[in-house]
Length: 180
Image (cartoon, rainbow, N blue to C red):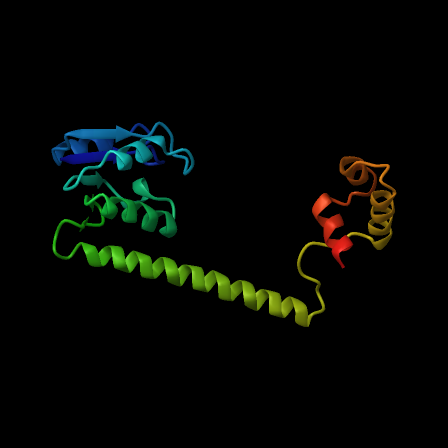
């Protein structure tokens, strides 16, 4: 079965262009997301949950399906697990053709590359910050607050909520200092 999926975006707010293209492709069902947000894509979730082996999900362009490379990998994995296929008209991608599945592998490779680039840039930034003497991570709580929290805790006269309200020291921070 050919199944279309569309959601609004800036150049097609009412999904009219998408509907025309999906109709020309003879989609038997069309799922329409009511919003363009990346969150709460209930129609996409419903569509993927109900895919059957051999079905083909068709979109007019990749952006309609996913908002990031990682999201694209996740959706393609879900489609593949169902034994279904994917087609994007603008990019001329069709995983039902013999040349289709390498696309999935390429996207996974690009997502891994993207994660590596972000990780390396973060590590480089942290290293440079340390070289300049910048302290990374969450700022430490003032020692007098920690000491006051410990005294209050050991007196057994205060609840953890009262200790936090008075000193600003959370339960997990307090316990971490008590373990030392």
